[in-house]
Image 1 (spheres, rainbow, N blue to C red):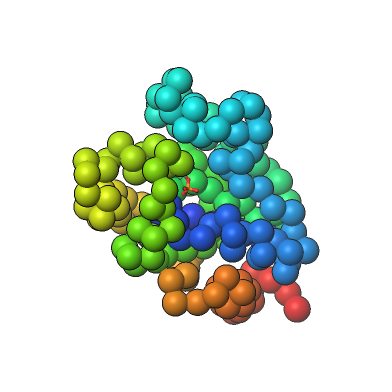
Image 2: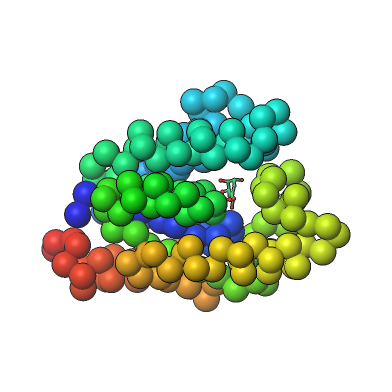
Length: 176
Ligand code: S3P
């Protein structure tokens, strides 16, 4: 195995778990959203505001291709990276795909702040729970492409990392 790719809905813990998982494995860590922000010199909400979602998705696709060839890296994707099948083709070739999951209440608590997640803000017509439910429903099949899933709602990030490492070992994807 070369890389571990974390997919999952917004607020499932991809970035925080990803950093800790990378440290545990002695891997490097890349967060695709941060990578895009650094490359563009502006925030994700600014990109959406100035150029719209389609332009962001094109940047996201470039970011996937530019990072999929790395080695020994934990790659945290954005919640919508899974929408593009060619992103997932490249990421499947890149390593093991792990989906992080959480219930609606946990996602709501972790994504409550407006102005940070333009896709959720746009879907939010005054009822944020409904917005999360709509997007989860629309995307639920897309997250089934993972090799395995871990629910992050009931565990500490450290426990999530332990679970991922165990699962990777069980699958023969890690040694030691
Ligand atoms: C998005 C999720 C965000 C970010 C962008 C779009 C989405 O990433 O890529 O705002 O469509 O779900 P996080 O999952 O890290 O919040």
